[in-house]
Image (cartoon, rainbow, N blue to C red; front, side, top):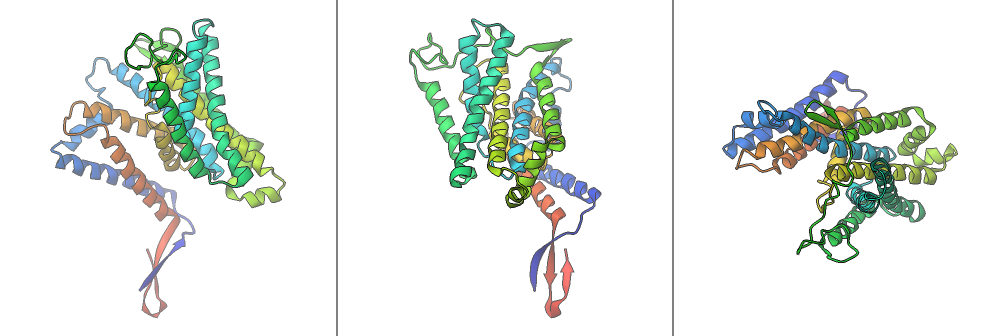
Amino acid sequence: MRFHVVKRDSCPLWKRLALYVGAVAAALVLGGLLLLALGVNPVAYYSRMFTMGMVGNKIAYKSFENYLKVFVPLVLTAVALSLAFKMRFWNIGGEGQFILGAVAASAVAFQAGPVLPGAVTLLLMCLCAMLAAGLYGTLAAALKVKFGTNETLMTLMLNYIALYFLTFLGETKATWNFFLDPTSARPIFVSFAKTVSFPRIPMGKFGLNVCVLFTFAVGALVFVYLRSTKQGYEIAVVGDSAGTARYAGMKVNTIVLRTVFLSACLIGLAAAFKVGTAGILSTNITDDVGWTGIIVAWLAQMNTAVIFLVSALIAMLQYGSDVAAATVSQVDSSFANMLQGAILFLVLAADFSTRFRVVLEGKGGRKHGA
């Protein structure tokens, strides 16, 4: 008996949704079994994780503020990566671009913060972060269009260059290194929060960071850009077939450079939001958002609107796991990473089953679909 994979003609929407929900449920069940093996009540753990410890908490608004600090850079990075992915340019360099953007924004905060108005400094932080990250991302795109290099490997290696550059800044005590606290005997990043930071809109005790509003505005603009502009249409055509795009008279190299620059710029903007809210640079400033953003973009199938929904769930998973792990000694925050991996694997398996089916061919040439 032999089997081979063939493409499905169609898959009903209800069946696709059922498979995706089933995949997430299966991942939660696997996580629950692991929690049981560790002697932890999975119902209690999941309850605290998904509510992020806000139930019965007098300062629940603080938990939601902290949750938004995880959500904003994640969703903006995922939206940015989806631009390149739609064009089949596999930008795996989100981490490095985020780091360069954070360093540029911090440099502006230290140098311009004491002498310029806060609003001007914040604007310059965003612009410089976008420019630094955009140019860093475009480097890989330029090498691809000029020499045909593999963008996956190039962007991956550029991540480590940026990471070691940040480590160098964090460990080098010198008179020129204004990122570090000069009064400390050991190298410690110094805060600029008292000089400049993104304002919050007071809503009672809760303070809504303006970065949240800007993030939703950027998401809406990207959605319109992809759906209703010539440039968005060109991205889709190049993603389907670069040869077809060239035959239609499109300048494919220009489209690649422009789109990757825009993608990296948005990652730089996410970094400016993150560092401008934290008020300090650190060696773990990314919180692996460049890697998690790839997962989010794929789970959402590069749909901008769905990316916001998936990002909200993944951010809840990440922050909620930290909150839950704080009360359970047997489990640490890395449980969220394991759960993300299980969800990704099972959702991809569900997605595969919606697109393809396995045909078994028995004796006599009889075929049975599965």
